[in-house]
Image (cartoon, rainbow, N blue to C red; front, top):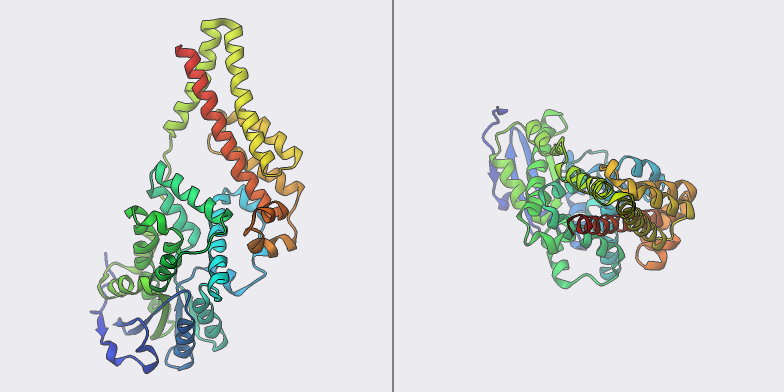
Length: 414
């Protein structure tokens, strides 16, 4: 079913205002709305000036920006991070998304230090100037956490491991951003640049991070008309989205609400996690088989190895993260129970204990972006150390499961 739009019209660039003619842009008229798409470079002062000139020109009643609410708040409200409830983030299972956002922040900070301009400064200028002039403001990008989760769902196990390892390198690394990445930012997209080494050989990742967001933002722009916000819309987007966004605006006939809804849905996980069940059956069954075939001595030895490897390696990970003694004991106590709580990582429990015992302060949140630039800062900052606890405890627990599982299987079939 479609919304039967009027035939969209593409306007020739020669008709563009003078202050846009030296900038990447496209102008599309559709359904009585004139959309001026201004393509920007996320690390360019010229883009900041072009955005401010476009808004100051007075020809627009509506400004749309390639941001979601979370990123807009991070750009325009320095205290937003300090109001975060870290315990709530962990309890709701959003720790991985939080880590991904930190990786993006770390990447942006390295760019800012290297180039002398904050990435996304032109998006920030668009938001602030639109508010100052009391223009209708729309944040049209999809939630970055939702984009991250959809990307992970489309990747295989190996792809997810590569992205996770790359994000960790972004978190802990302090190397300079390459010239190639900087050039990509001048023509592309911040999220694409963050995933650059993976997107090149992953069509699924490119589709989620770039192509889906083109369709999503076009749908959000078309919804502006239904909301009665205005008829002269300036859309400030990364230059890498310009072509795809203009194409969707011109050609899409599907109802914008339907497009947006379809791109916000997360694929339901399987009701029956067969792999995890199989792993639990192998471990529990192997230990049980040991008791049955080899008697108490063999069964007790297999159980001892399972507890020893899972508990000790999870505790070691927590210890390496500088965890509180009770966080370490929590990791050690709960890691052997992995087969009976398949959906909750061991690191979640140890990180919760850590966050409650060493509650982050306002200063920790405010210093977070600086502290994650070096190893010492990770251990000094309570927010970063809690996240490190989550990551290293899970790695230790995972290693323990595989090592102990392999030893159990070897004993049973040997």
